[in-house]
Length: 73
Ligand code: SF4
Image 1 (cartoon, rainbow, N blue to C red):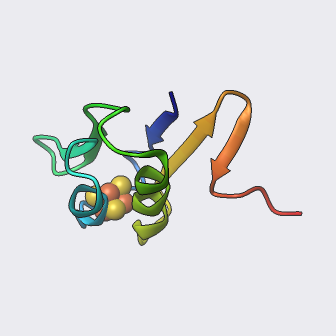
Image 2: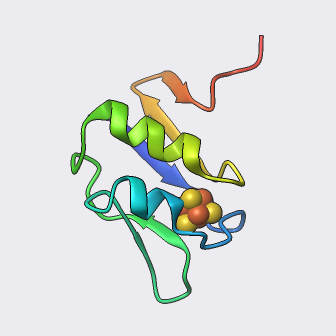
């Protein structure tokens, strides 16, 4: 299972992640994204949702490996 975190301070509530993976992300009462079900979509869909975030507020980890954003070399 992927570990997904949303930086709510950075999130601007654009809803892109919710549109990409509505079973995984929902906007909370403050219009900030939160993870409601980390297994609600295929891993590739979750990564695509993280990539769709205009402010890169979503981090996706697989164990100790960070899948998104990819660490800079
Ligand atoms: S795409 Fe990014 S800014 Fe938009 S709601 Fe999701 S986490 Fe927030």
